[in-house]
Length: 113
Length: 112
Image (cartoon, rainbow over all chains, first blue to last red; front, side):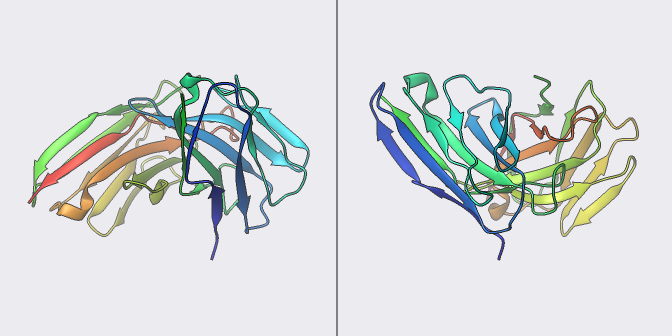
């Protein structure tokens, strides 16, 4: 079964304390992406990756980093989290390649105090 | 960036009623997708549309890809309580297939 797995599901942290949200997919797909979901704004793309060692900024990349050292994993890194990064985060990958419908993880709810 | 204009923002309906929501954009889209999100979960694909004018059904759900390629609608017939959730339209604009755009969502509440 195609799966996108994120961890943790919930995270509460303080301003400035570095954190990483992990994402892995078992579909052997090249494309992976990160979104944040905020009320009234839908899902906005943070970063995406077309392949190993290839990453690009989405709409809202400020304050985030990503890495893609292997095809399976695409962690989202917040070097110095701030309260405006409190949000619901989703990792996604398209089972049928770029431009095809995305398969989403179950989300990570982050609160930065 | 270019977002999709989705309406309405929310709907409160009685069980058994039909529902209609739509999405528009100033850009042409290659694909129109409709997702549903339930509390505590990620969005799940309901319907995918790939051709202008295409009308596709999935049970009580029907969606259409507008002939201008700039809009789409989703209808739900004879709503039931489990239809509750947030519905999103999405798609990659023609100028960038890597960039999946989302509407702000329509929050549907169904009263038994």
